[in-house]
Image 1 (cartoon, rainbow, N blue to C red):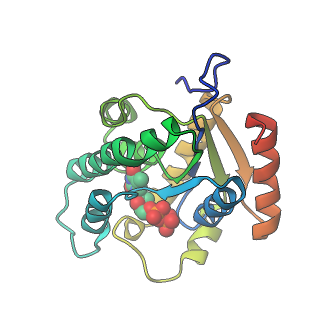
Image 2: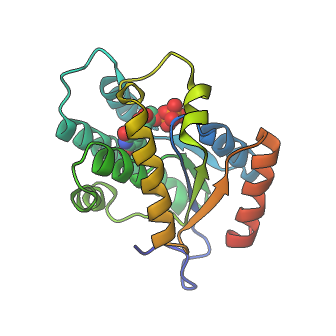
Image 3: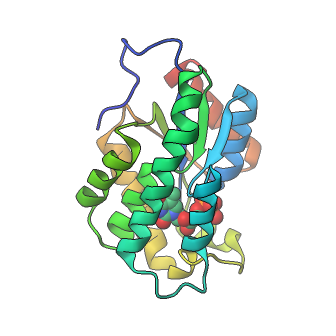
Length: 211
Ligand code: TYD
């Protein structure tokens, strides 16, 4: 997969940095921390826009047990399309850096592999949804899935309810995606304190993007 870090990329354009990780990996905390340091636009998926937040509450509601896997994949993609058009792309064009807590790789991991819909079909769906917008860098916070699950507590959303098997598949998929695209991804050891992990994130951003 290509990204936007090629030498000819427009210098006046902002940078899109995405955080990925399993549930309870601490990625939301780290994504917010980085956004504050860079004075970047902070956003999250599913969500990031009023329409996206409506889709989020629909798709994560634990009462919606009848939601089909294909419906879930399409709703994630629909929220993302709105997110790209309404927030991410205009912000990048205005020269702002954008830090997003989750993006396309979440759908590859959760819907493509976790739900068994297939990585290729979900990738294709997301090329349409994003109009081809890829992150400049995806930061994968790699935490032990069992330890991360302990951190989650008992107030689980509909997808977290799907359990430990999905959690392990998700983490394995991120590891595979990161290994297949070392230019586009950086893997951070997510075990440690917020400051320890944050220092690793900062070092990686400096080395990879000069930020
Ligand atoms: P998130 O708010 O990141 O939850 P947490 O920070 O607790 O991990 O994500 C909500 C859930 O949505 C999470 O279980 C992962 C899932 N998800 C998908 O299944 N596919 C997607 O494309 C996205 C963006 C999220």
